[in-house]
Length: 232
Image (tube, rainbow, N blue to C red; front, side, top):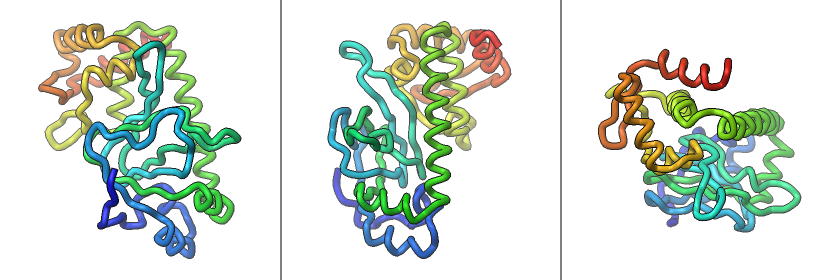
């Protein structure tokens, strides 16, 4: 991780978007911008929390240890998203890791300034509270799916979540290249099982795959797979 000399535009991240205009100069004075290469770790599980990160450009996976030599991807973050907030609490230790999925630019503020921002910027505090609640609900839903849904249902659901998060690019494919290993870690299964399940979805003409690019041919069929497996 190295310093990014260009810095951010002070309008993209969650803090900048929601803070008082009068607070923007304080953000500019306290922010630090860094760039990461693909595969570089922003912080790792068990590290002491020193501050909060916001993604200015690129995509990041948030993950944690799950059993021996396995990882579980908790969420993905992209431009404007907050990362590292799960470490805020009585014990200031990151319970998760964050790794760049592509070249990433990060905006960082230390914990003291982040806490001051919460005390001054009530809109930011309110929206962050709603974000925490939404993320908790999604985490609980994700863990329920891991326990009760079939692999095919979990993969279908994961593709729908990725579509909702990142959308399509101009070529009509998911605006995110995801490896089969990462998709396995996101759905709580193995590389081999994900490979086989994706092949079945291709044969069923629900998706197409070129390298790591996935195009969804039928959102309706994919949604039906996920809904049926949830018992809805």
